[in-house]
Length: 65
Image (cartoon, rainbow, N blue to C red):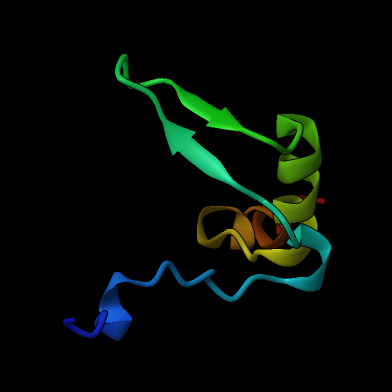
């Protein structure tokens, strides 16, 4: 009997503690389906991820005042 290679085993990716169990798939029509509410995901991203495009936005407003 042949041995199963380690690459054939499905490994779970490393995720942030708050996103344990998060799963997202793309169906045949190209639609995203997830087991996590999209509003919850957006809230997490807003808190944890620095948006490069919005970095300089606050600096410009401070100079105008």
